[in-house]
Length: 306
Length: 246
Image 1 (spheres, each protein chain N blue to C red):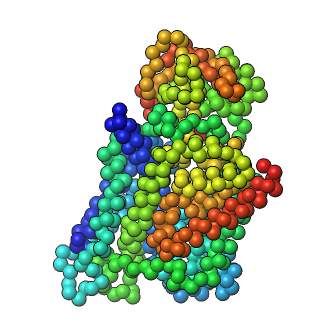
Image 2 (cartoon, chains in turn blue, orange):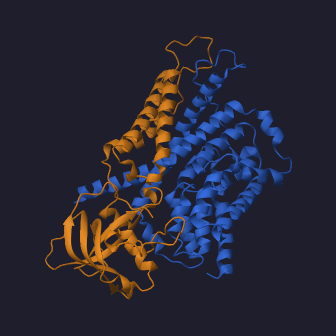
């Protein structure tokens, strides 16, 4: 009896874990490939020159950068880390990190497909932008050394690196970005796997319906769906379809909270964050958006009278 | 661990993971984990992994590294062993633990949803015009929620497949037939189910069944739900596609 229960538990756990892992893998690979390309092809000075000098516009630009780099929350972390080594100011990177998983063409399209142009669609886009910009501005008041952990430069495995480092052929450059992508894939993949294991464990032990049955009040429903978003750790490119299944029974504010906070922070992204930021920063990165999202969506719930 | 050996392990792991994904696709088991519309994305990832594996293998450091060539370190990073071990977890789990779809026991622990996933796009559901005998569990529940008079559904013939599970809230003679509905991957799987009342004396098997009978409605705890008056409950093989998609 006990033995068969263990088997059932193990297979359910494995299925859910592999579901999370396999679904996130293409996006992680995309992010690491983008990171490799940025490292090899983007010059540090070129990036610096295009950054606005004004703090507010810098952060705003960071938040909108996802429109050019279409990445979800798994891909955005390696890319941000790479941009930091190219001299991107931390605050702009944080705004990018928080907003890009929502404000990018793929997610805009999937949100529209699921909900059409309405309160949910515009609410998701605008509030994500506002939360990312405010959080970025808060972090811009802190010195860089307090936020980031130093990145140790990974050696490049190409055997060609020693021959003429200034004039690399295009093929060598491609090979080099692939090598960097591989390094990133293993480093970031580690956190995706650990985060996925934890998320699968929580899901196997803690039934989703117990959580959802706890209440649909204007405040409780927000907390519940935020908790669910963190637990589920599903990719932002598809979470709109998942949210659709709650739309009938949950308040508009809580659906928005699910769609805004989930892409910013969930179990697997917290694990990925620890590769880039110091522990204290990771904690603030989870708490500040949480506070803002709950506050704004609660206001929406009361305004809409739900 | 030497840098060379580390690279070769990395190359092997990436290629193996790529092959693993391809194997799951060939054997039709990829959809145990994800919605079928992401299949192309996973195949792309599989090919990318194999290509990266090939690149890593072709560019492994040579056995002999010249003294002056300090750009290629002799030793792998300190946590190399851990990296490789953690990266092999998905592979090991995938190979060692038999691949199963979420079924009755998962429905028991996850609970059954009352909220029915709406169809993506929100177009007007045509479930009501569907021939009742062709409706699956999800379509029955949708028909129930969209019908102006649920009583209209009473008496219609039912022929559905699903797994058997027990709902503690119902009296002993009632059983549930259920399916999991997934919108993106199994992480968001929600169980749905309809209660059925077998003819007295019917032996109710475990696992996957086909339930045939007539639809009716019943009230449990003040809530009106669908109920199948089952004439026949037969054991069937698990369908190739165990999940339903909204």
